[in-house]
Image (cartoon, rainbow, N blue to C red; front, side, top):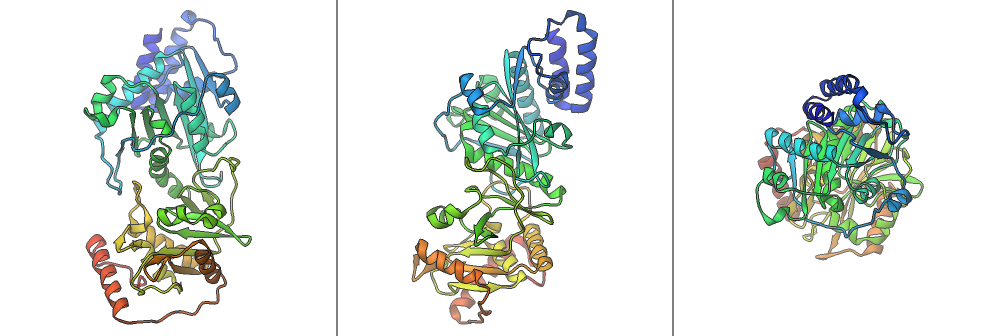
Length: 435
């Protein structure tokens, strides 16, 4: 019987709808030979839903356990890892290695077969995005309670049945054991010793092998890339920025990660310490929760946008007001210490930076949202926490005049911007975009 169901699972991995029908047919056809259900609390609907993802429940499945329950089952917090290899299938920007459709299909079959062969499965549901109005539901299927516990901390809590009503949920397959067959799909090398992560944006699937679940940065990078098309389709604008609670208002902040992590006063005011926010007509959300904030919440729309750059030449003023076109231009360039990081995004992303900047321009213009540019450097040195907060408060006072300073330093910096952006995106810029 298990062999029949496994074949149904393999079919489900390649075609969820057809696989679910095949699983149901195999189940009813062989119902007389089934042993009694050992976990009556788990519905057949859940098992069929898991089967549609290519995984058959062999014995028991534990669904949406609390942290204390997972710990009783043996879950522990492992040491955090970094540098786990991430491969992404799909049209992404960010320089991560890709995988072919055939490679991902083979890897998925091996992983789902393994998960179908173990006695106990752990299933956890959550979401990326702190608002049901604009989020992406995620289901984790794992052989390891520790993996589920860590991954549940990456996701927002959702009602138990919320994912069954979602039209396009993501699936994370987390398997803690790595066989040589699994590793050989991507190639050989010591870089895979601790595990690896492989995301397929088209299939809305993420595979975490070995200890990859303990590299939260890689997991969040993969989820950010995978959820962007879903959030966009639901009317949201996913952006690589932070939401900041300031004076009772919400501020959208774009800045290099190094600056954000070094300014503790800003750090403490963030609604989430992780980069990633979604702006929509209904409000704003952050992608990932902190441990103190696990309950979903829709925040108001940003009342201001702050773009942080760092220039030691004096060409960029300490703080200045920007038009929507100027804000989009500086956002697109992502200028930091003589280098450019388009749209301030270093993680893999399926979003074209120029299209993202154009969407930001539209939001700023339609909502008449003020935007400001802060230079994080003064006299060649980074400003300290107090200096940064003073500039932030000055910007949010909304009393800054437009600065029209023009000298050779500004001309040189404009030339650098123009040369980079033209080489990167061509010369077909929206006419509203300007330095």
